Image 1 (cartoon, rainbow, N blue to C red):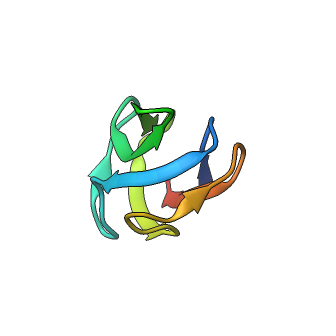
Image 2: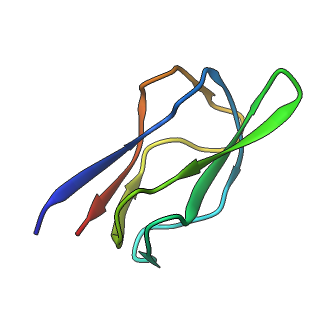
Length: 73
């Protein structure tokens, strides 16, 4: 199984975590929503698989390029 890292494309604050470990996701699914400058930006997976870890929680600060979730695909 391949390890797939899902990264934030922006700097902001975690507004919502929509996936949890064990969830099966497909390409295009939203895993996390980040609030930045009063906009809600979804973190979308490009690959399908099973969520292994969510590395952030609600209200956590995140940086651009930070790994926020790990999938097994």
